Length: 204
Image (cartoon, rainbow, N blue to C red; front, side):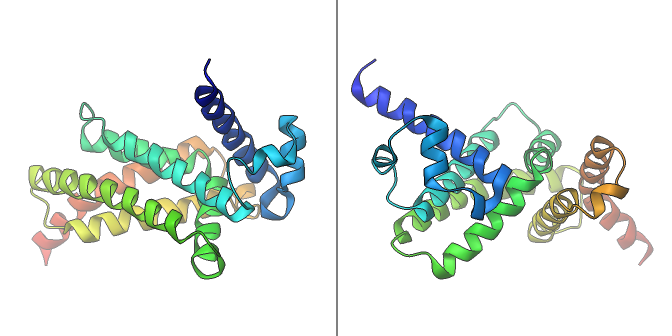
């Protein structure tokens, strides 16, 4: 393996372990000392891959966004499948969804020296949104829904992130019962939304 390939492999491992530590311990418990110890690397080696903890967080968020973009590029899946995969990505790891959202919002106002990374994140997100909008337009047309693309995508986002917050809540977890059943119920609800709009319009 050449040096560049070694560098990329080490970076992938760093990101994987950093995300794991972050999800297990939260922001306050995820230190670069702990990360270096977990990887058995010198702390200075970490700085070859990122300059600060904020930069590391942004790189993790970008990595997650790229993963979502690759998922949406799968042209063999129909819209309902894409929606289910998107929601399950968030609902199987609700702690990641909640934490990444909180960190991104914090860094948008307090992060220093990471403006270029925000530009990269937003470019990836725009690419994904363009694909999603086109796909959603086709789906809504195919079922003759009166719901607008903006309203449907906004509803899916709100439902997914609200569900992630509930699944991640230590209080509500005691009352939820089977989480798999709940995840399926949220997906069914999201798929039913544009059809319900048609029904409401018929009786208006």
